[in-house]
Length: 184
Image (cartoon, rainbow, N blue to C red; front, side):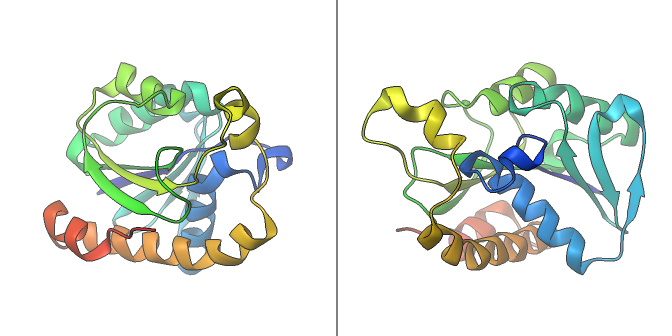
């Protein structure tokens, strides 16, 4: 079984923000798969279960995502190599998709929290959101809605990520990297 978590912040206020692209992917997956919703208060997450996936949207807010991930991983005995975290990445141009096993958090507080709770050896799907010219605007930028043009492209980006998640379950991560990495 794979634990697939999309990072984001709960609430309608954040629904279409750049920081919530991970939530957007999980929402789209759950639309198309037969799933059961799991309700356990200690998970601090929205969890949907399919035959071979746990689809997770932590409800702890981005900066505490690790609390949710560790409680679910421990409950279902999911090892780190079967944990996939989908997140926004400021250092990649908008729409770029990259895959990585382990590594640093790059200043991403959601990843930092996960690293602190389970370590660094999990699969990351990094979705580029671009970045503002002024570094002082980063917090505002990630918590701001996608532009209309970006929203027009987001569905094809999300679809590509969903296909890559299916591939991760069947082929090696190196093969996924070569077949599903996109560049802009």
